[in-house]
Image (tube, rainbow, N blue to C red):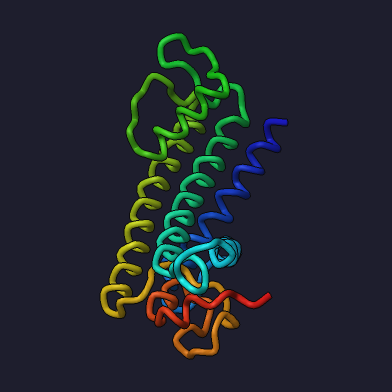
Length: 202
């Protein structure tokens, strides 16, 4: 059972890492599969909500909401992936004083402060292999923070130069306007409000 948890956690980490790297490093042209799918769902949901904008919720607010939700999803999935890894072996995490294996709540707590690089220390890895993985998790947490800041800076820069709404784009079929073509993450930031406020076609 433990090995299944480790495999599942590794799969989640691989998915979210590839999605973040593809989305952030190719911000002008492409987004990752998770980003693309989540953006489609959120944009369609926002355009069905009542609002003062004639297309539903104003595109600026929608873009901010999509961006915040996307970043939160990345962080949550990263935590979940490492939690599953550290939950995959009884001795993966132990109490720093007693050496007793941590329960699931303690492992969730340990995972959170490890990837946030706080390093509180009341729980510790239970062996050399888990010490290495803890170091990898802490490094990954720092790298994710860097990627998120890079992503936000890219969107902010695009908004500052265009004055349009921030947020990931989702589909080349969203609008006929050429500024919305392509599945790029920051593309929508360069679009006009009319272009980006159109509801995606099914």
